[in-house]
Length: 82
Image (cartoon, rainbow, N blue to C red; front, side, top):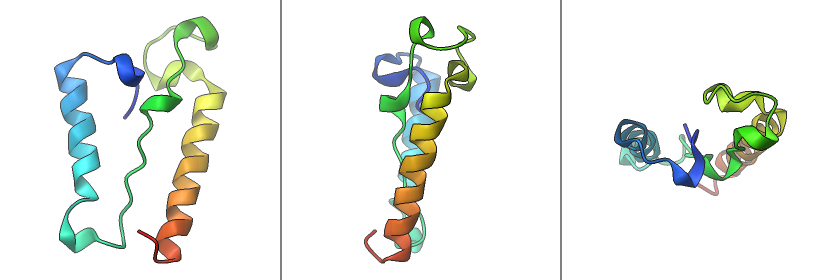
């Protein structure tokens, strides 16, 4: 999760982000797992359809950016670039 963006301060959320990123660093997953950082895709409530603070504030732009980045990561894996 990158919800909260680069301004996220909640230690539990930050621990979760670090744990998610760490999975791709395990040697047994090399070439099979990619980590896609999503913090830059967070859009605050002021520019999002909702201010719920979860589910990415219902931002379609954010969901698109995440999917696009994950798709590129998958292509890199399939091409042996990760």
